Amino acid sequence: MSIEWNGEGLPPVGCECEREVPGGWSRCRINYASSALIVYQMLDTGNEYASTLSAFKFRPIRTEAQRKRDDRIASLDNFINGFLKSTNGNHAHLGEAIYEWLAVLDKLKTPTSP
Image (cartoon, rainbow, N blue to C red; front, side):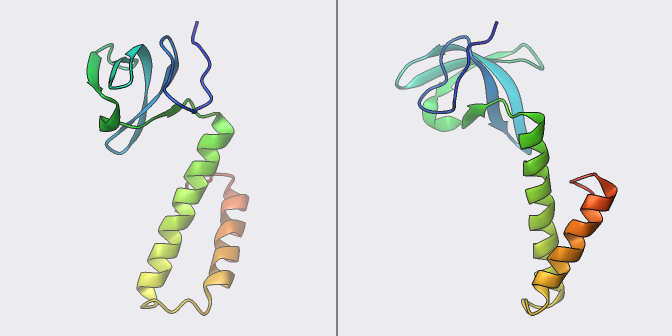
């Protein structure tokens, strides 16, 4: 049984949370934590690692709604970046473009569709 953690301070021993990895986040379990060192086991591989606290970021496991929100924000960020590149930074019609983009996402019901 995993110990709950709200994201404040250090993740407690026994807590299942997410660790930042290249390209996103991956689930892990905290096996030991001190003011300088953390030992955790990656749940996807079972491998155990020890590192300084400053080496990685940890966060509570996200709910499905939080993941969908994060995906939608990332998708919108990518859209805005592409829009600004294609218009050489002219944002005169950005509001209209965002409105249309969100309407498409709502119709598709898939928050990460490009």
